Amino acid sequence: MKENLPDRMLEVMSDTCWHSTEKLVEKVSHRFSATMHVLKKRGYQFDKRRTHGQKYEYRLVKESKAIA
Image (cartoon, rainbow, N blue to C red; front, side, top):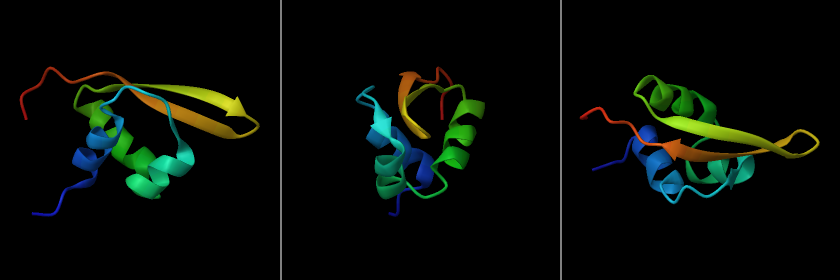
């Protein structure tokens, strides 16, 4: 069965480490921010930090308590 984008993002980010924009584009989708928005609506929380210039990293900080 094919994984959907939210599942793929959670698999990548479940380690709670920082992930670069480039890695998320490669591992999830070029529209990873839309996927992140879907997960935020489900109760997940993410941190964002600027590394340098216009480069950012993201990490999962809180998993949803909702039952899927």
